[in-house]
Length: 384
Image 1 (cartoon, rainbow, N blue to C red):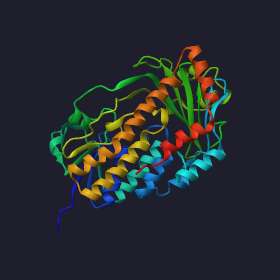
Image 2 (cartoon, rainbow, N blue to C red):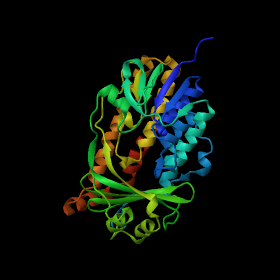
Image 3 (tube, one colour):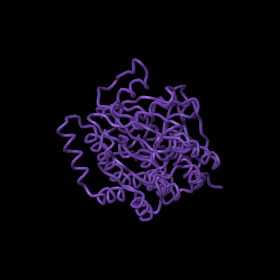
Image 4 (cartoon, rainbow, N blue to C red):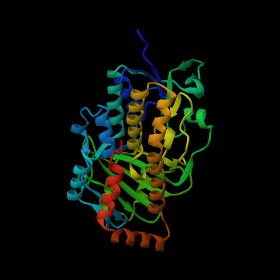
């Protein structure tokens, strides 16, 4: 009997688990190496936009997610006083959802990660925690753990995030680029927003936004332009409370209702688009390949798209370098374009100068909603 091909995936995030489950369903032996000691409930919310929903459907990984996810029926950008600058209303959102063939969902990141973990394990994927990679031999699809153990596969997929060890093995070690702003995220069970809310409020060098997510909760984020490495001397909640002073009352109430323990702060980084994602039997996926700022809500979505295309190419060509190069050729232009658009969106949203902010807001108000609809349709259409 012919041996099953073996794939080693480094990283048990959204992209790593999605590709592991997809390849296992195709009859490939898959081992996932995760440096964390356990896959615990961490993070906040995210949007699973229609392109990612369609990809999950193609991968057979939707399961019961439609029963738990919040369907997001509108998108609104307001100024810091709550005046609408740009909006996609429920009727337009419904028409767009029909056109692209799927809804947009709001989910807690942990809900999606645990869902994909269960699917991967049900398909026979071996997920190993406390497996920290110390070195990578990309030419031979081999990793060496910090305890000296060597693990090899027919192919190696680096899905280990912004500071990917596998990426360093392929491209060398280079620092990511700081966006110029930091972000606090939180989750609350109390809000004056509607369950299907998704939107943002733009001020001068500061921003607030979020969406409804599963479990009758609301995910929110607060962003401010500042130097990297800052700390919250009086706690994260105190910092965000000061940041949203002057924003609408329902914004301030959402922050006030969030427990301190459910708020965390991260500086926002991305990486410049790269023309190389892999070499030989090794490739990259998700943030390891195309780390982007979260401004378009496409980070996890693009990782799921990666999983779909990589699965399709491996099914067609086997666990071979040729399959990995075809995957990279198909995915790189779209993913790199999203990286660039997300960075540009963030720069504009974080403008600080009052004159520039006034011009930005006026331009948004004068832009027809059909333009927003066309932009979203391009992002939400799965081109594979």
